[in-house]
Length: 307
View 1 (cartoon, rainbow, N blue to C red):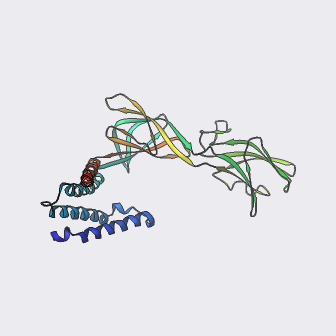
View 2: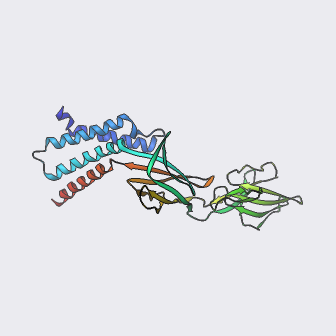
């Protein structure tokens, strides 16, 4: 049994099986990740046992770099299991101006050793979006830049379109007047005056609802956006640890914030609510074992290269 567990054939077989699992997960899988499956964990355990048995078989004659490389690989695999077993992760929904220390994990609430207040939330775009008005009939389509005050003439219909207003995030005020709810392009809308047969009518067109007023006009009109791709979104936070002074910090998509042994990640936001931000709170007690494994592996590789 020891000879089987320490054999290279077993090592290659397990590595091929893991490679196949990674390819399947990356290219084909559309369901639950395979990383949580028991058979995937069994492959990881088998690989760790195989590497440890191989190192143990040659422990008396092997040099230091051989032992360090194999020990590093085993520590990395064990660290992955420890990280999964002892990792804490929960969601922290926030709204501008509110402060909380409660995180949600499923139906459970967890009180954090610090409170978080969302001071500001902002979106960044790759480019400033621009509005486009599309006039269509059957398969013919024409696009015009949406500029307030601009008049688009359509002589073939005996019509013209005047751009009255453009809103980034359409909302209604207390007096039912249209106004921007936020500076972000969450619910873009265009108010157009369309004159046909000497009669002028005013309509609101929305990017998120392109089918509006389809039967009210002899031609199709839609309002759309160009270059509206979000580049990043950032939450400005006030962190107040228990028994300590408060401090400010920012969390963005690729820039987490660490405090009190926890890490805050920017997870999502709500396009319908410009003051809402969703953070993920995580604490990984097994990460140190992974780092130790990589450090051990690196030392072994450097010794090998030096030789």
